Length: 251
Image (tube, rainbow, N blue to C red; front, side, top):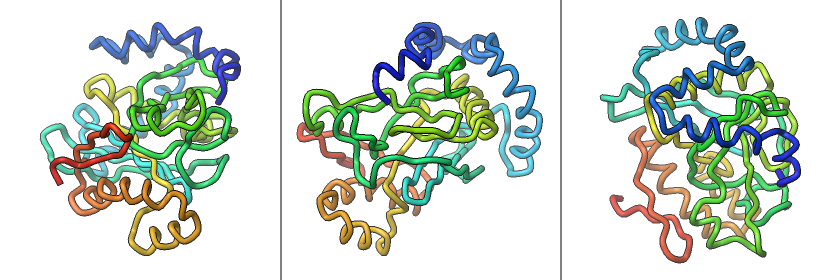
């Protein structure tokens, strides 16, 4: 999503207030001042609390982690109690539109959805795309590996089911995701979101590498975090080296 679209969507207008709110204990209170957030809570929070309880989660005590798989068009919401070491899957949402191809985002305007390891670093309650959550692209790896002058930015999980490089949901589903993220953000920082080209099983990786050999080395560097999570349901520590590679000092 280009800068002119960022301005059009009102992101720059509300950037200061939500960004500052991330640093306070009253984040939820600040967000609830916005009509769409209040409506999302009115529509979704009661049912979500019931579903959380039925799934064995405490609505007042959970950490949240998001995984996205571009090929499968899935956004997974994983949760755990703060005292627990491993996550459990709560819900899977459909990414309702897509742009670009499999492979990382490397420059502004390429239409690509990023791949890599990110945070949700801004909540936009007045987006032209209903509600939106900003992905912290470009990260340090993307800056090093970018092609051209600008890596691009303003990558969002948002409503309205249209996209150029973002992760769109329907307005109905972004309400649920936004409410869950507000609840988690009020107690947990940061919120992690990992974006993969596909589920990186050995079989899938073989197919991916045959179809997109130019990305083989990059995808092989994503795989250890994916594999560790599949085995342990916890997040492997990631360090970005001077060449922009993801490395795993504890694996």
